Amino acid sequence: MRPGVRDGEREPEHPGHRGGDREHGGEPGGGAVPRRVLGHETLLVLGLSLGASGVSALISFAGALTRPGGLEDQAARLNGSHAPDRPWLDLAWQLFGIATALVPVLLVAHLLTREGAGGRGGPGLRGIGFDLRRPGFDLGWGAVVAAGIGGSGLLLYLGARASGLNLTVVPESLPDVWWKIPVLIASAIQNSVVEEVIVVGYLLRRLDGLGWSPVAALAASSLLRGSYHLYQGIGGFVGNVAMGVIFVLLYRRWGRVGPLVAAHALIDIVAFVGYALLAGRVDWLPTA
Image 1: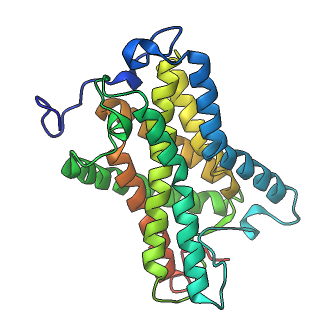
Image 2 (image 1 turned 90 degrees about the horizontal axis):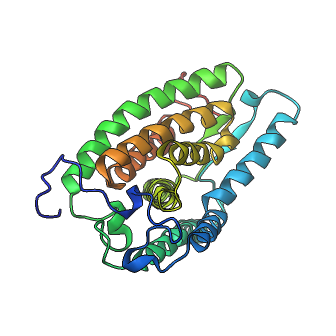
């Protein structure tokens, strides 16, 4: 926490919250990086991460729409096994997938560190509030946000599936081995870190620096979040766009992605582990 900022108060704006220099995107130290270069950088980061996932989800959704039968009769599977009969090999693949999925976050950390320590928000991921300076604030507000969004999200999913607008989401189909729950928790944390660091912290910082209006940046971030969940169906798209709007507004207020990472991780942990424990044991939870 910086001096003069009490827990629960909004931190001063950092460079990612301002429009910046019209030619150089507001980079500290005189704006050494032209806006055009920052624009290309942003497209490359998205192309290596969640932008590509959005295109993949769109193709997957098109395939589901054109396949015989309704969407509710098809399944969107997450956290599947890579070697069902070889648990140690399967574990190696699971850990490899989680680790490599975090590489774009390391790239973003490098690119933000390049901005130097001259910005008010600090260098690297600290500049977007992904650090350990305020753990109580991040975890506390993250739990509050997760409680509100998680429950409403589940109701939206069940309603969309019953209406034929969503596939049946299967959060996990791992074998019953000792590492199943730890891997599901690690996968949930990885998802939350990748999405909130890139789609909220990094993207908003870059769009602000490129001169986008706050409304346009909010729309871009929220629609991107919805796009890479489109493989789940219309319900997944709409629900995640709404979540994206809420998360952008909270980030603007707090100046930190920490609470958003915590909230997203808690939502996914409950979804993944809850499905593993309840699937086939309760009538209200759809299974494939």
